[in-house]
Length: 210
Image (cartoon, rainbow, N blue to C red; front, top):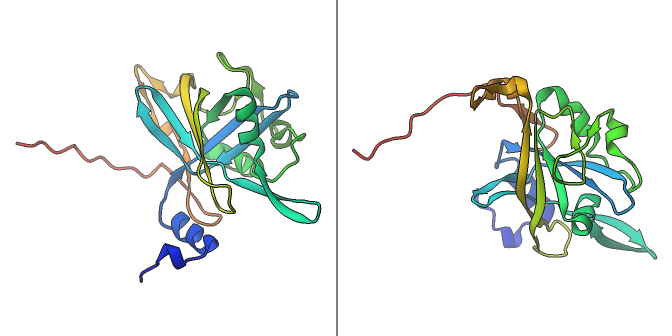
């Protein structure tokens, strides 16, 4: 079946994309507002894009609110905070944290502290002002490298490129100089309300040219 995206609705395109491009890693992004309020929200349009400079990228959309009887697009709290402070932390989500991560995906008011709402520990970061999630197995402290607004339309996204300043890895996950990826037990996002784990893995050796 062929889908011409120029003739496909925004909602339909979203369903097609999220039901086929998976599993998608989850960026659990912690930020701080100019008033000092902590914010925490998950995003599944996320990945690592460069080693030098070390760049992570995620894509927050817009939220729709009503003003003077009209629907308008405004930045989500995460993006608004990053624009203001230029700093954020990307925390990874293990299976044991999936339910708490899902709770923080709600459209809470800007004055709501999602750390408190989900019963999580906001612990000080090393190089940036926003806190990291203490319970998360891996956290990346980032400064804003670049922000690209793709379009200010319903369904449009923003590209937030973060330069990694440092990362935290839980001690029990380290095996010498290597990370125990099975013990990391991360979850990924699929379509709809479905998630997956990374427990079922297999190896493929990179081919040689000989």
